Image (cartoon, rainbow, N blue to C red; front, side, top):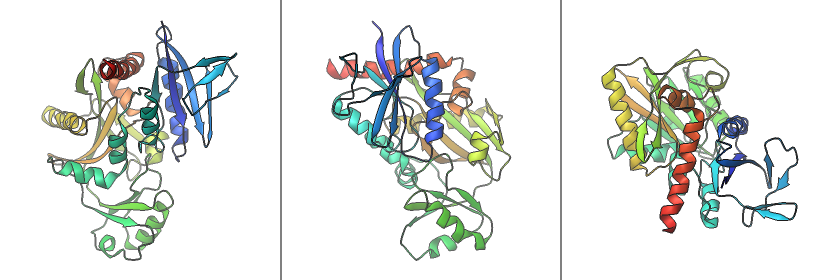
Amino acid sequence: MRKNIAVITGGEAAEVGISLKSAAVVCKHLNKEKYNVFKVLIDGNTWTVEREGNPVKQVIDRNDFSFNIEGHKMTFDAVFVAIHGTPAEDGKLQGYLELLGIPYNCCGVLQAALTFDKLRCKQYLSQFGIKTAEAVLLKRGEADYAAAQAMALPVFVKPNKNGSSYGASKVNDAADLLPAIENAFKYDDEILVEAYLKGTEVTCGVITAHGKVTALPMTEIRSKSEFFDFKAKYEGNSQEITPAEISADLTHRIQRTTEQIYKQLDFKGMARVDYIIVGDVYYMLEVNSIPGLSEGSLVPQQAIAAGYTLEQLFDMSIEECLKGREVATA
């Protein structure tokens, strides 16, 4: 009997457009012989559901995450989360699903909340030997930016809790620091001023494949912009090389570190960890708990390089969360 799968998308973040693209790819590639696939769109307080090929939308009853078709109540066996930013990458949606006992394919509440907060995530992982760039945290309303102004230029200024490089900028001149800070505050009430590390940027996806935590082939990012900003990520202003053209030793070390981070955070589902390599030393930039899943996104590229189809990648993700529910109820 086919399982009912909700692909949740939309949300409240600046990244909503990316979320919709990810959801479209997931809906396209989930195995229709195994799953009845429904797209659930969160738009403010309005949650609606639609099925492929049926333009009629139904309203989700948020009391139990169900909907009605011709008088019959429909529920979901599992949820595939395709939301970047809040309310998923900060753990709010996972908390709701936990209360209802509905399995989902991504990390839990604690992991999402921690990795959404870039600075606290770095502070937590540093105790396990994970190297990160020096950073200063600024809070909205604080007038003293002395610590940030004392940092050697160039620096990166970015929202502490936001993705897709919204509000992020590289500052080369002291006169541009305050405008960059004010711009970042448009997206979060906490921002990071982070030391610039000149090197090779790579990113490594990680999944649970058939019960085993597995790092995917890495991608090397050669941005045509000053850094891997929104245009570089989503508008083709970068060259993405998968597998990355770095030494076998560095590849092995970074993949093992990525698996270590995944296990240390007690993750599940798909994730991606970004790094900068300086010489033969690599620094973690951030952990992405719900990476982009459009056909041109990094984790799909890496999965294909590892020999998986997108159907297999998404199927493993659903099977993992369904298996988790079976274990929990056994």
